[in-house]
Amino acid sequence: MPEQIFGLYELDAAGTILYSLPHNGARPQPSMVGSNFFEEIDAIENAERLRSGIKSFIRSNRSVGSFTFESGFHDGGIKAKVLLTRGHETQNDSVAGIVIMDIKRNEDF
Image (cartoon, rainbow, N blue to C red; front, side, top):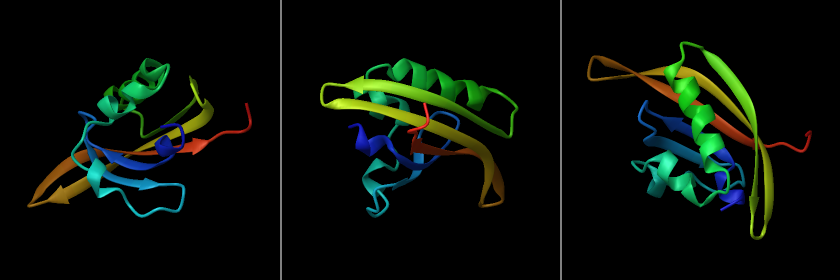
């Protein structure tokens, strides 16, 4: 799971993944679309810290945000920077708020 978390995501306010593109050069991951990001990260040690940072941004009125995240795994650890921004998606004359999230490897701790 450590490498799989790095990528670009679009989430709705409930954490449902609307779009996912990994940073490892792979194609978009349509299999993740429709799943809940907060449930997908349960395998991560310290997942609550990541979940809390994202949910805090979703509940806020900020247009952009970022935080750092560090977690250990049985096969190594990750250091990441999470960048968040808001967007709006128009579909069938209705506008829905989305969160665009980029989780990048951070070697600058």
